[in-house]
Length: 428
Image 1 (spheres, rainbow, N blue to C red):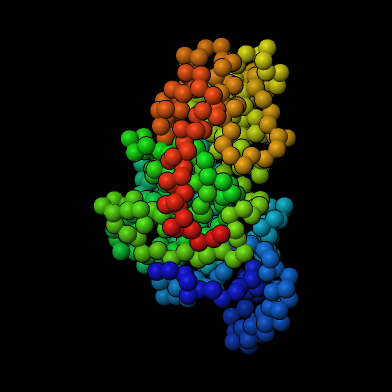
Image 2 (cartoon, rainbow, N blue to C red):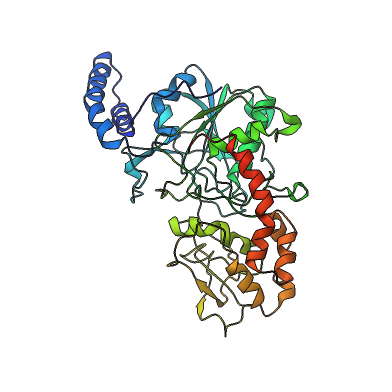
């Protein structure tokens, strides 16, 4: 299915009024008519006030609610799967009274939600990176929560047996090794095999303004990289889902019945600051901007800020030359990382939190750290190749190849990818 038929304008403030009124328990026909009149009164003001704002897929509830009527629904969601009570793409507050979770919103609309599927970091986004996410029951709604991280990365036929449609609403950050797009692949594949349609509620890509990095080689596929794309792909979740289908990346090249609830007023070069952090160690816009460049350190003996308040904004290691690096810090367990690399050990490195935002991958930090490591033999670990998607990057750095020369080796792959990417773009 396609969403080209769903182009009616709908405004988040209207959704806010509906949710508030429903939450007050109004069920009567008189109240319903009164509510509709209120919504009509604010509509004209909403158009003039908010038509230049990004309106994410989840906010356009009038576009997708009819598709859920009479259906048994599963939802792939986490803490970012929310509907704001006001138009808030640039909203600074994370006050919980400023939004309602998609699951709660749809339950209030009498949508028959049967279960929630939780990706890495869990339904409420509280688990560490790589931490086992367990099945359970959501204490607020009593809905069963099924983990899609750990051994059960792909929904089983039994878990899908009582569903008619699956909604996917997760905020991504546009990096190949950010595992939500791998979960998207497995959800689409499982649903395609079970003949269950998938609905994507699209959200912006905060790193959607550029495309960069080496293309993943098929022999290095893993959960942190399943497809032959660059590190930074420049696509929204909805666009990426279309590419998964179109490129035949699902098992046996099956195709998922896909509907994308498109955003309004979004362009790839839009600046979009996420009002809710997408995972425990991406707390702000600076960390999200630096993440594609600094995540390479996860495959080395360098700490990328986990165990501090500046995750993915600083880096350091006790194995870096302290005569070169004058910034130092000690990683300690915190809510974002229970067991940070170099826990309790003094690390030397750099603070990048005030640097100008990047619009391409920056390898200079990685190259500098390798060159100033006091024991280069133990700098890289085997996870680095999974992150890079190729063995070549490690070999290039160890051989002293310059950043510019490394970038030149990516050019042909990036040009080919950009042509393929263009086939699936929804937004300019």
